[in-house]
Each structure stands twice: as C-alpha cells, then as structure tokens.
Image (cartoon, rainbow, N blue to C red; front, side):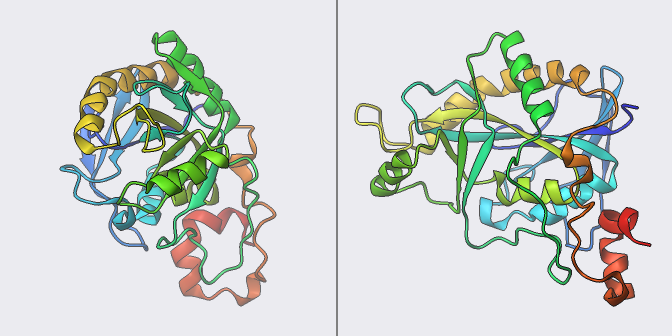
Length: 286
C-alpha cells in the first residue's frame, strides 16, 4: 500500500527539486536509448521521489529530440507509479492569464516526428479516452489551491511539434478548436506513461498568450523565461503539497492499462521482444 514512488518530470525552468532529502543521482540504461539525464532520487515527506529534467540539465534537448520512451521507461524501472509532468504552456483562453496554473484533462496531438509507443513489433491497443489520471489531477488541483495560486482545472492541452511557436493563422485555428493551452512536450509522454501503466497528470504553467491575442505582445522566449522564474518556486510548492495525497493502492484504470490490450499471440513473441518489453508486459505473460 502506497509503496510506489512519485516521479516528477521537470519542464522548462524546472531542472531540480530543491525540497528533496537524501539526494543521489541514478543513471538508467534502457532498451530505447539514454534518458534526458541522470535521475535525481530522494525523499520528500518520507516518500521516495524520482526527478528528471525533461530537456536535460542545461536544457540540451529541444522537444523533438527528447527521448520520451527512455525517460518513461527509466521511471518505470526505478519503481515510479505516479508521474507529475510540469510544463510551460501558452494560454489559448483570455481567462488563463500568464502566471496562472492549469491542470488539463485532455490532449490533442499535433506532433509528427515522434515515436509514440513502446510497442513497435507487438500489437497493443490501450484505452486512452481519458489520458490523465483523475485521482492525480484532483490532487494537483487541490494542492495548487492550497498553495494560493490561480489554477484552472480541466480543459485541453494541444501539443505541437515545435520548436517554433505557432503562426498567427495556426493560433487562430487552434482557438476555433476550443483548446485551452498549447505546449510541445506532453505528447507522446502521456501516451507512453499509460502504456507503462503509470498514473500521469500535468501541472501546466501558463507563460504567454501565444500569438492569437490582439492586445498582448507576441510570444517571445525572454518574457516566457521571466514568468517561468516566478512560477518555478510555486510549482515546487504545489508538488510538495501533492505528495501526501498520493497514498494507498492505485485503483484507477491507469494501473491495469495493458490487461486486455495486448493483441499479439504470446506464442509468437520472440525471446528478444520478451526481454526488451519484459518490464512492461511480464505480468500479463504466461
């Protein structure tokens, strides 16, 4: 009960977790290559936590170059069950001001260069209608309120390929779709977390109005970084307040996402495939 570790994937501006005790670095080798960086393992309120800077320390990897499969696999290998994904985003709604926090419930994927599954030679169809763990999303929302932030619960995160920001025409189109925030990193991350049977939720830090807003300045990296610096401490406080709420046995569908999803006949799985994917599928193989 409650033994699973909590993972934090830090986005732009969040490259470390200052509140961790008993800190050590752990390098993980994965069948999918190297993760973005060494994992920072420690404790927070007595709970074991694993932190990974998504872009690597020094922000070495742009969104399309992140090895999402290795990152998620490494968290799974270290015993993580819960993943808090911190991300900088643009606001697509007037009510979501730069500096506000958002806990989205849905995603739209507009990436096109990324491998979005662990299962390239095994047929696996997971259910992904509700891509965010509802238990984690509620916990993040309550923690953000307790931290005194302005936080919006629900809505849709649109993930674009990047690394360029949107054109004005694209931004207006996405507004017509009714999306709430726009970013470049949470897909395929959320898909892979579900395939790895991890609970996943996003804490999004709104930094700008993209370029759709007629009275706000067009998005530029300088203004984004200034807002991020103010929000990083708040994000760490929200995470600290969330940790005690993630207790007990997981009863959400995330924890058994692969149970009826593996379509390939087990008899056809090679020894190499079983070895590479064993961490993910062994519990369902006979």
